[in-house]
Image (cartoon, rainbow, N blue to C red):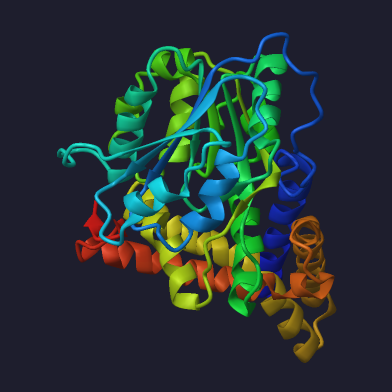
Length: 379
């Protein structure tokens, strides 16, 4: 029990540091605050890359076309060579009373580019130099009617070059309720929002589903071409803009929702595993460290608690229980944000074990040549 005691104490110390010194990652109050409207509303182009998105477009595209934006705005949907009629469906969803809609198709994908970023580049070029801001949003993201106006107000009033909101993902099925809140919690732990939003801090992150970027800042950062091969394109974009001297902001959304369903574990598994090993820069050493770190932080607390109680070793049980309590407490705000019951926080170690397996599977798929595979393409 002596070895287990030291491991449990180490886990507890890690949790004390995470809870108190890691950018308050667990708090969910980083939201777009109310802002005064700008004196002049800048022109905006909304760029939507879409590949085989006919299932979700009827739920998302109308919300963009119905934006109540006081200035001039247009929507550019880039049909990335879909096979399910995405382009034709998008054109049919356009309406005279909504924002102007352009549906276009990019040239064939060149080497060195991911499909999404090639589509984004095409849309950005089509937007033209008059578009002062570009809202880069995914085809599965639905926006509240004031979403665009609030994003622009935040960017203008705070002089931000990139304003991004993490869309509220769907939590209707059992697997979605188990996996999704933890997914956002782990992302915030990896990239604490407050630290990312601080000028001069090394941390930089954005959410690809909803990112408003100032055109000048994007050009200073090298344009979309600067991140053309990135699998995790949102974080890469934030890093590029911040490295070029731009001010960035990332928070949780209240008017931006993902409408993509993930009813089965296999779909959620693929969502995580397709980019997990890329996040580790395809390093076996970082993979080993991540597996050990996940085990120490998330699996040791419940294991030590149970082992200590069974063996009658109070110190082990106390250290493990305290670490588990800190883990549970930091997860509760995210569960409240997703309107999930508080007792679900006790399942976080089990969910973390699934993420550990997803990360290992991501590496295995990469070694097999099927790493970042998405909609018929492998990068």
